[in-house]
Length: 150
Image: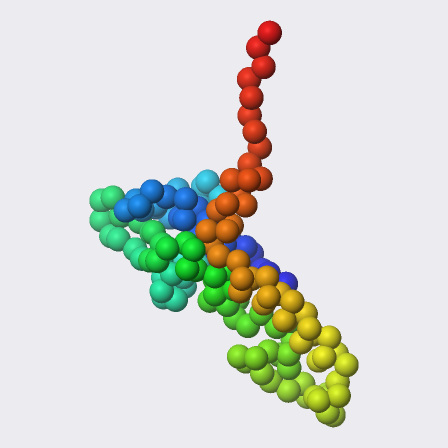
């Protein structure tokens, strides 16, 4: 399950992806516009910067921006940077495998088998979706406001 950390990180990176080239956004603005606690967002953006997805600039006009094009940042990479492995249980993880203490044989365990399928299904979506795709979804799903005057 995606925690608030992962959800907020995705919302923030989509916000940053919508900026004009060369523009930065201050943490307080991203937090306010996306209803994210600022202190929590500070830590999230630092994690994403440390993962090489964001760059930061200090001083007047400073803030955060994407470190690379939105089309090259996979949603799966954002989630893994913030949440760790995508597998729902450790024995189904490819990057952080850990056998269950109560399992006699991981090769025949039906729980591990189905959780591996869940991991593969999730990874199939998030590793084939980019931040640019999320921006497009946000535009496509935006409500249309029309003034009706008679």
